[in-house]
Structure formats: C-alpha cells, structure tokens
Image 1 (cartoon, one colour):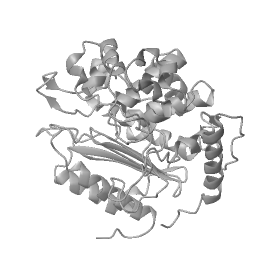
Image 2 (cartoon, one colour):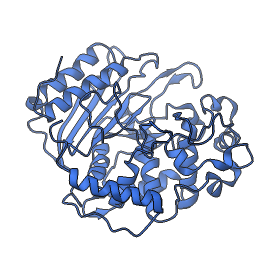
Image 3 (cartoon, one colour):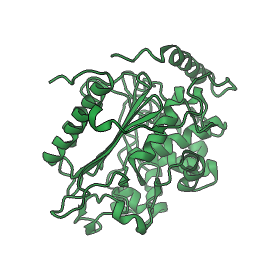
Length: 408
C-alpha cells in the first residue's frame, strides 16, 4: 500500500533491536534516533468534512443500519489530528440527544492495551518486569495448580497461557479478592505456548502484577505515568457521576444489575472487582485515545517527554509467534486476512477491539491511526453488525489517507 515505506528504515532498526532484547533480555540499548521524538498531536480538522466525506458517509450508513446508536471517529496522520467527528445519537432511545464529539465511552477490552499493556512496557523499561519470568514469581498465590508454574508473563501478553476462560467467574465471586482467588485456581487446558486462546484471565493477572510491582493500584499508576503526561483528562476508571451526560450508555442489563448500564463498567468481572481491572474498566474519549496512539507512533515519547523506550515499543509491536502462526504481538493484536481492520490494513499495524463496540488501529507504516468508538451493545449485546461495520469503516478511512476511492 502507498505510504508503507515511509518509516521502513527506522522500523527495521527497531525490530532488530527488539529481537536482540527478546533473545538477550533487558539491556541498556540506546533509544533509536527519531524525528518523531516529542511530537505533540496538532488539531487540523478544518477540512475534515470535505476530505473524509466518503468515510463519514460510511459511518452514517452503519448508524442508519442500526449497527450502533452513535459513534465518534478520530483519524490522525503525521502528527496531525485530521478528523474528529460524532455520528448518530448517544443511545438508542427515541428522543436521545446527538452523540457529542467529546462523548466518554466504556472502552471494554481496549483497557488491555491502552492501559495494562502500556503499564507493562513502563515496568519492563524500569527492569521490574521480566517477560520470561514465571507468573508465580510475581503472584505466588498463582502457584499450586497443575501447569501454572510454567506460565510466563510473555504467555499472558500473547494469550498463549493455556488458561481456561474467566467468563462467568463473577457469578461465583463476592468481591475483587474472591474473584482473584478463583483465577489463581483456574485450570490450564493446554501447555503454555502451544495454543492461542484470547482470555480476559491473562490480562486480569497482568493487571495484578502491575499493581504489585508498582506498589500502586492500577488506576493510580496509569493516571500518574500515562494519562497525566499525555493530557488525557477524560480517561480513567470509575468516572465521576458529574460526567454522566457525556457517557454513552451500554447495555440494558436485565440479568445481573437490572438497570441500564451507564457510567459503570459493562464487563461483569471488572464490575465485581470494583471497576478497576487489567482487562476492562477504562472510560475515555476519541480525542484522548488519539494522544495515546500518537505516543506509539512517536516510538514512546510525547510533548518532549519520553515515557517508554523506542526499543520497548518495537518489542511489544513484534509478533511473538506463540504459538507458531499467531498474529499476536505483546498485548496487541495485528491485522489478519478477513479481520476487523479491513483489507487495506498494514501488516505492521497494532490493533485491538472492545466488546462494547470500540477499536483502535495504529499504523506505523502510514504514520497514522484510527479510533472508532461506538456503543454497539446499547440496548443489547445481541447486535453483531459491528463485525461488518468495522472493516468497512477502516477501508473507507484508509482509502482517503491513501488518496484512492474505496473499492466496491
């Protein structure tokens, strides 16, 4: 695709560095030189309605098809926020107000990458987290169950731990510690590193490792080390009730909480953990997530401050091949044929989705990002049209960035 070779030389250097780190462990390897160091995202949306008209029409079309009540789309390239636009309404009720451009969304599993994975990168940089250490080094309570002693932090991040799913654990837990005790005793289904299986369990455990290594609750660590430095003022766990008018409602829960879920985490396991967990619980806006995406495109720096080493960013963006053929990097997923990122996606992009209808796409080859936030679970999670909407919207946006009309 056009634009994929802009940063090929730098990226090749970083990937080699990441490979050295993966083989040799943490080192004092110097950060790669980059013209992007410290680059702050500049708002440049004046021409968005003209330039991105085909992409905006695509989002509007999916609102009309009721794939989601509303959405906010953000697109950036070369350090400039080129598009930031709201679509549809804030919920599915007949008289719902228009979706505000600064709407706050329950990110669901975007918490895994924007929050917990980024925290893991920082702790790796500080030589506190060893990717190939057994999880029991950091969480001794995790030991004792057959197979647990062989599971490493890298297995958690690549979803190759072999652990059974955490789905439904909230039904048998009364609080955070009770749910963690259930996870510590979760059986393994396959040997570590042999099967890819996406599991919330993995990142719940990683969130607890972050808490213990940092000596702070996950929400406090991220606020101080990531969201604060990036100026992400609308990002965090357990949002204030004063923000409710801006928070997009998620599901009408008639099973567990018996209410319209709004301003509290949609994910039941995270809710049982008090709304702060490694796998779900973050709330944010498209504008805030744009700054986080720019941090990654800047190879770990923003506003003149380095938060993460460039070599660490490259390492976490490198496919782990655990097991062979897996598209997973560390924490992040990467595009695959037929995936949500669409057929124009760069093979080097890092991506993730959230169950509530959120997604993030960061493309180092195009030096670009796409943030799509929706509340597709409102009023019910049974609406699965997001699976068709995401690739169509990504293709429309990438066609604009590449200067070509989208193919029919």
